[in-house]
Structure formats: C-alpha cells, structure tokens
Length: 260
Length: 233
Image 1 (cartoon, rainbow over the protein chains, first blue to last red):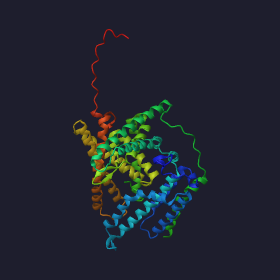
Image 2 (image 1 turned 180 degrees about the vertical axis):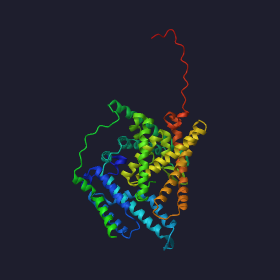
Image 3 (image 1 turned 90 degrees about the horizontal axis):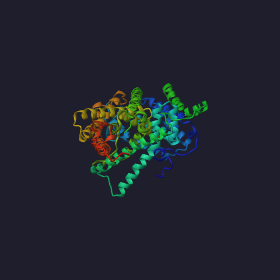
Image 4 (image 1 turned 120 degrees about the vertical axis):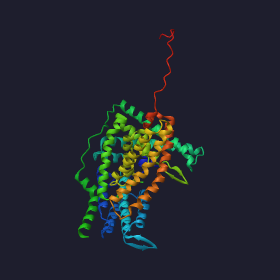
C-alpha cells in the first residue's frame, strides 16, 4: 500500500505536469521506441561509440530532468538490468580472440567491447523507458497503444489487466497477510504445499471474477467493442517536441557515422 | 529474465518481432475459439493472475527462491492460445511500466517466453497426456515435464538467437552449456511450482482446467425416483 491510487501498476508513475508529462502518450511511445532503435543501431566497435553513448546518456538525463524524474526513481528503474549484468560480465571471460590482462584475469578484447556495449545499450534504453513509465499513466499508455493501432482485442485484454491487476494483487496480499499471521514462513520446499494452493485459489478467483465481469458487461450492452471517443490528431509541434529525443540521438549517430 | 535492448542485433530483433507478431495474430484467432466472445475479460483477468503470481517468491530449496514464468501453467489452465496472449500482455506491461525487457527486444521476449516456451511446454504436455493414464497424476506429470522442458529449451533458443546476432565471438558450446545448465535448475523450480498450483486447481475445480478436459466425465445422474401420485402441482 502507500502507492496511492494507482496500486501495483501505477507505482511506476510519478505525478507531475512537466512538458514531458503533457505530451500525447502515443508520441512518447514512438519517441522512446525511436530512441531505443538509434541506441541499438550504434555500432559498438566504432571508435566514437562511447562518445555517442555519452551523448545519448546526456540526452536521456536531460529529458528526465525536464520531466522532474529524480535520480532515485531512475536508479530503481535500473534494477531490472541486474540478471543481464551477470551475463555481460561472463562475456569477456568466455569470449575468444586477442586477450588482455586486467587485474590478473585474462580477458578477451572483443568480449570486453561486446559486454560494455551491451551494458551501455541496455542501460540507456532502460533509462528512456523508465522516464516514459514515470511520466505516463497506465491508462494513457493504453490510449497511446490504441492510437498506434495495436489490435483492438489486445488493447482490451491489456485494459482488463490494468484494471484488475490491483484487485488480483490485493487478493494475493490478503492471502499473504492471512498466511503470515498464522505463523507461515516459506523457507523450504515444503512451503509449496501452502503456496501452490494459494496460487491455485487465486487463479480460480480470478477466472470466476472474469466470468462475472463479462456477464456484467453483457448486461450493460457490451458487443465486443469498447466505446471510445474520436481521437484528435496531434499537431505538428507536438510531434516535433516528442521526437526531439530520438532525432537528437539520430543526429549524434549520423555525425558519428559520417565523421567518425 | 527478459532480454533487454541491444542484446541481439537489428536483423535478429526484427525477425523475432515478425515471428512474435504472427504468433500473436494467430493466438488472437485461436483464443476466440477457446473463450468465444469472453476473450477480453477472461484473458485480461488471467493475465492479471499471471502478473500477480509472478510476484510470489516460491522457495525452491537450498535457501533460494524463484518465481514462476507461468507459460505452461497458463496454457494448461486456460488453453495455449489464450496463454500466448496473456504472456504477451504481461511482457508488454513489464516492458512499458517496469522497463523489464527492452522495447526493441519485445518481439524476442514474446517469441522466447511466450511462443517457444508455450509451444514446447504445451506440446510436450499434450504428447505425454496422450500416453499417460487419464488420471490426475497423469495430467500433473505431463504438465510438470512440459513446464520443466519449456525453460531450458527457451534458453537454448535464446543462445541460438544470440549466436545468429553475434555481437561477440563467444564459443557457442560454452555459453549454451552454461545457459542450459542454469535453466535446467530454473526449469525444475518451474515444474515444481506448476505442479503445485495445477494440483490445487485440479483438486477444487477440475472443470476449469483446460488441459484436463479428458479427465472430465459427465456426472453420474441419479435415477429420478418414480413420480409419486400424490404430488401433482
């Protein structure tokens, strides 16, 4: 709890009214995807690659500052990277090719380059996606995806998931409180006997809730489509403002390719 | 574990993206057969369930715990097409709201964790349940083996994609062995959790389990007692 109104999914959102918050969600989605594409397209082996990464980092941090997304929020976003850091750390050790000695370890040069590139790219993209999640409410993201022509059934499934993730998560939390107040401590394999049925009954409750929701919708005239108002076309300025990030990144990439 | 941006090169990402889009389009059709017009609310609630249950840390032994990926469990519970949709939606939410798994790698993640895991796991489940006896134990064994195999196979496909989109000249054998070795352990955990959850649902509401339809038989109807003459309402 304490996450305010949005619950589990809304926890990513940081309330604000910065220019980044006010951008149309579908434009922001395009911008973040474009930025990630530029980052991924930057060749790791090029001598100017690290300069380009530094420029991208400055761009993302600039947008984050403009949006009022703090360093702590960004750092929390980076936690998801951890398993892949392990994989990247393994690369220099197992890769072939010419080797260098670093602190007594014989490491592969190409492996080092690849691992560094992987980490840099992943970090930059995660930062951009964190800014997107921190400045866009889940509902707005859904609207953005809809305007980007995600198939309507998929949008509806997403919508139900958004609406009920907190309800289902809340049931899970109440089950945990009930378990733990009865002295349950899941430390060993035997706990599966308790946790399995808990998850099982969570499934049964979710499924039956789905059926009730469907019946309630039918009784209110649902015919397979959600009613929605007409979408207003985004003005050119909004596009320009939103695409400033990927365009600036693309400019960095282009100058690297041309001059480097 | 989700593939972040930049792990695979652009052609590989594009190819897996196209594969994922095709699979999701097929799944949208197939799910309509499994859930008819109830698709949106049912799949949405099931996705919420998968999302929630991924937050539960199950003890796997030796002090470690893991969480469920849930592809095979969902496929056995609600059917493979719906499961593909649920996994896609969960991965999309994780990429968008938690930056877990890159946006450009979304296709790769859907292909690996949604499509490959479910096709392999559910395929093994169907094959085994055709051979094994039609009992609760048979269904659970089939689901457990399917869930177990789905994890290392998905990891192996990841290694193949990594080799195709080679960013470093890594000896493929070493990486494959390491990845598969780690994921065999994860797969054991996945199987244990899948069996525990599925067993619980089978014990209470076997009618909800899509993969156990063959266990169902019509309830034995008691013969209606001959109508008494006096009751004429």
